[in-house]
Image (cartoon, rainbow, N blue to C red; front, side):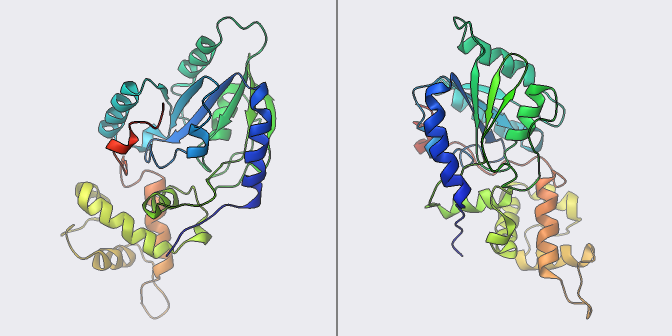
Length: 277
């Protein structure tokens, strides 16, 4: 299975960002704490001319020990990083201060570009900064379809659609994007992606699998674990067979809502050393 998703509105948004860069003072780039590297669009990273702050969202769903490792990595790369929990607003005031620190000599209202992949929390962040519901929010990618300027208590924010890159060359990255719902579920095979996720959890977080799904043997075959979860949760067809799509959707939902536990799907690698330079 080859995962690709780059709808037309993303191509249009990419062009609009390039057109508006001359009006922008600061770029706030969002990444997902569960996939800190894979959630960074290389096209966005290439915006060198403007001050940039890396806002790490969904920290409450990520493994705090692995988040600390990522913070050390970013510090070595001299990146300005703010950790956020958008559900409760934690880190929002820190982000405000970091934006202002980038523009200490500027008199006019700062213009801030907010960018990131789909479903990373851009609209929720903007609503937090604005102190009101100014941007549409949804749990699926593709809610924001066009650019919009929003006044946000001392800033002007440019909200843009979530942007992937035109071709997902690394399918391991594509799988991670699918697991965190940065790619529409209709685009990929949910069962295949769920098998991939279960293998990762089996290798890295077996205790969380045991706790969430009451497994006796977390090292069992993935197909057996998948079927057991389906039976336990009542994901059954009329003849008592496993409803495989419903089971896959249930496991993905459990992961995305943090019900399995705090999980991070990747750690820094040697080839990450130049990502923020």
